[in-house]
Length: 506
Image 1: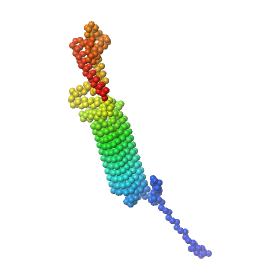
Image 2 (image 1 turned 135 degrees about the vertical axis):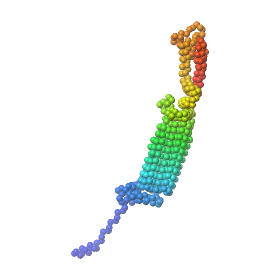
Image 3 (image 1 turned 180 degrees about the vertical axis):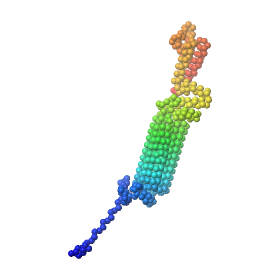
Image 4 (image 1 turned 60 degrees about the horizontal axis):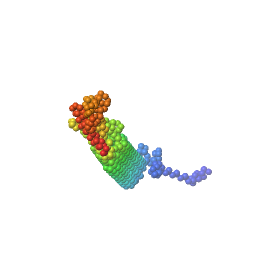
């Protein structure tokens, strides 16, 4: 019986071994819904492959080597890759390159690389420094939502087509020196770090810096904007340097905010708009401001010395109003404030030139009232310079003209002095008993109000050179006083006609 069981066991076949389980694929899901086809790492807690697994949880160097190998083999989709130091300097990419959502934890270099097709870096993150200097993007490139945590260099980089940086964030120093933007460049809502430079950059298409936020300094000196430049509601907390920049078309700075704006020697070739802008401190010295508007902009802390304001629109700008200026006027001009602080002849000359330019600007716009205010300020400063130069004759004459008629801008002062002179001479006639009725019969009672009114009447008649009439002066002193009054009256009437006529003709 036992032998039969043993024989039966030998005849029965053994069960086949179970097949090994298929390797799991990466669980990373791309933006378009596709999943990664790479094999997941055996020890990955998230079921990710060697490329999508965070660098801290894998052999980062090995993953980077494999990544560079695949780049050389012509692969192009690296969405969501997590990489250490990556040196792609001098590479030529012949197809669309996708680095969307990629994370570069170390130093990354695309220096002198050439992207012949589209390049996508949306939502990517560069934790270390990135160097794309002298690279060339022959087609559109997108860095929308990208975060640069280390220093970033795009010096001398060439963007032949559109470049898109909307909501990108630069945490440290960034350089776009001598970069070239062939078509539109969009930097809306971009956040810039301590120091950013676009010096000598060229923008051949429209450029958008709307809602730009700069926590430090930004330099755009010698930059060239060949088409529209939009900086609406941009804000800079440090220095914004546009010195020698050229805006060849429309430039819009509407409602932007600047802590320290430098537009020295900047050129606005066609039209610019600073309407509603806030400029805490700034300079437009020697700038060419063709058809630039400054509606509702407080220019009290802005230098304008040497600027070509003749073609600018300043009529609706504010000059520190309602605060009164250092010379007692309602307009505050920074050159004047600085000149009074320094007290030097050179500073006063600059302030005089600034007021002269502003006067011409307002005159060209037809705002003769404000132009007159700046003319008065210009002459006041020139008078101070004359005193410093010991030109006492000019200084005295200027003071007299200023007091009498405000350099021809204050007709009401002439009227005031007319009444003042008339009243003063009436007091002299009354106190000295210097007049009498010509008939020799009627007497003037110099002890009553009626007597004074008679003297005042005589003063008015004499001042207006109508002749003595029924009242005439007595004694040589009386005739001398009357002669002086007649001469003064003739001069004041001529002055009033001149000043009033000048104001009305304008």
